[in-house]
Image (tube, rainbow, N blue to C red; front, side, top):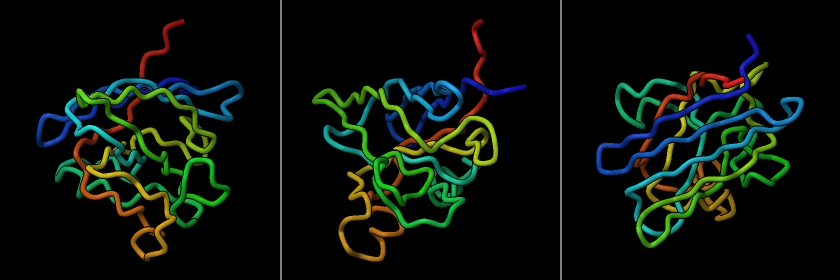
Length: 158
C-alpha cells in the first residue's frame, strides 16, 4: 500500500488542539501540510516532526526532532537541516494558526517516512538554528511542547 495521505490530531495538556492533514506531492517529492491549530498564544511557534510516535508522557516521550541524516537544526529552506524541521507557524490574535505549507524533505512513504512519528507545536518561536548557541544548533530554543500527536495514515478519497 502506497501512503499518499496522513493525519495528525494535536492535543496538549492545556487548551491547544488542532488537526493537520498531510498529502504527498507529485511523484512523492514533497509533502503538503494543511490545517488549523487553536488555543495558541498569538505569535510564532516552532513546528516539528519528532522521532518517536510515543506520546505516553506528552511531548517528553516524542524524542528529538526527526534527523535521520544527522544534520544541524535549520530552517525549512536551508540546505542542511533536520528532516523534521518545519520552521514556525503563526497564531493570529485569536490564537489560531492556519497551516498551509509544502515541505521538500518529509515523506509519507519510503526510507524516511514520517508515518508513526509525532508532530509537535512549541510554546515559542523557533530561532531556526541561527542564534549561535549549542541549543540553537540542536533544536532552535523554541521552548516546551504545547501540543503533539501521532502522524497516522489517512483515508485516501479516490
